[in-house]
Length: 533
Image (cartoon, rainbow, N blue to C red; front, side, top):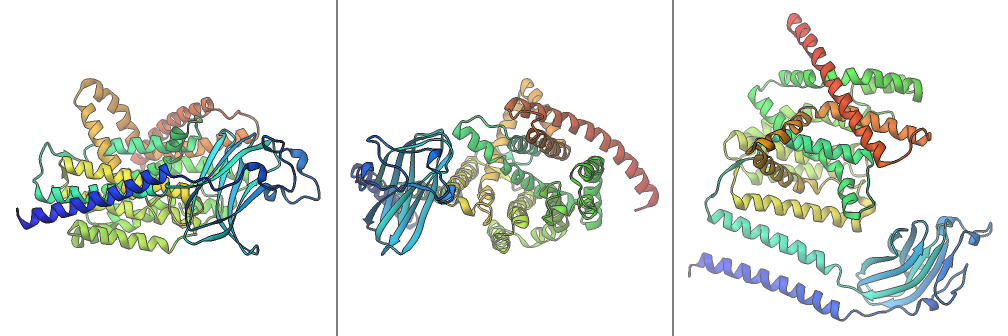
């Protein structure tokens, strides 16, 4: 046996041992769960009493001498000493409106540390909150808060030992090990199978991204946890846009490395539709919302989104022009200096580090966190021009696992760090892992459809969507804002049917806008050519 094979075998054995130990801990912990809390009847309350079955909160509890509604703790306790470790708090309840549970660590009855806060959704009857502590807790307190609206009934509260945090650790380590193993096998094996060009169906990516963003902005929801969670992450369609934008900008600029000519092409593509749309939109905002003159100029020059005044059409408009201005510098640097994937990772790491400077700047964080995915798109385009962007089976698997890991990170951040999602950019960072795998999957599915007559008929409208994303973006943002304002005035009801109708109207408006912009573009091109600009 060669030393190389022996080393690989030792690595595999170590991976199996680590995962086996985690599985043993999960299994053992699940079999030996300890209930630490006393009977729910032994908890305490300032405002009500235990009726033999539950603690009940009603609006009649709220009187003038009681604290604010949001601070009203219906019951609290059990004041347990806990050693450091991982725990679950399981609450059985019924309520008419969403309530809150908070978990505190009290030290010597005077220093209190908040360990976590979670909601008690009205549509559920059991809610489990997971928390951990890295030191012994002399006095644990759990507070069940009541907002003073509707009825709240707490039937049972269980505080138990937990193995919850071992499970994501097992999944994460397993994914890391599989990624490492695939990289090892990839280096030892030649590419096999039919190569697939990632760029072939870029318009399909754009169509998917546009539909995803439109559904996200539509507010359509189905009261199904998984479905609604997918729709709530529809902002990730923008990351697909920027990945595809990075590819398109690199290919366009490298073909003609003239920064002025590149920006001219971008302007001729975007500005006709933009001004055809923004002129009536600005007129509406001035008449209805009394938009000031400075914001009018800011919107016309596409910079209002970075001013943070509240009168901006949308932040994406400003972001697009910022990235277009950066394209000549980034494309030239990537073309000449980024000669390997490891150097690309260093550049992406630098962009990630740069984004940390904009944490808690709500106007900028949503833009700078998208720069790494655009850089990744540019590097993919570089590989494409070098005829090296083809994939074997292990590459597809690798991209798929990266996407799964990114989705896992997004779920993890949402679950355990909800307060940091916007300020620290945790909404967007995971899409750096998610987007390439999603685009690869879309290319694969589109390739299957392109092989049949029926599939080509399906791809045709999607290709139209992919070539009309700018007009669709402008139309749907404005129409859904108009719909929401009409709902607030009780002119239209809030329902999925009306939201779907608004989507259909947005598609029709986008088609008209594209037609108008096309004619304006022809006129502008004639003027530009005659003037020699």
